[in-house]
Image (cartoon, rainbow, N blue to C red):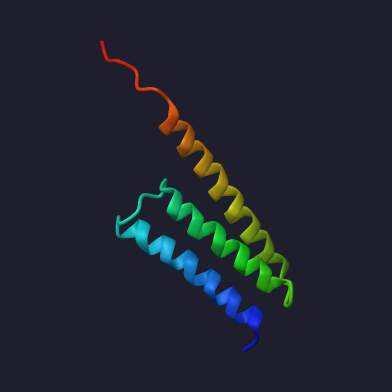
Length: 87
């Protein structure tokens, strides 16, 4: 097994770890650690694709990371909003 294969598998493990933690309600889907695992997973899988390119996989990884970053930014904005008083 080549180094790019190992790196790609570590990336897949990062994705699966994030998914498992979210499904088991250990981490929220809006938790920055979940996003970090998803981004790291995407970067590592994309790294492995440099040696054995697959367009469909590359597009899936790119959009997975894009959606993760958008969700992380949205969650951060929601957290930073001041709470409104109920009347």
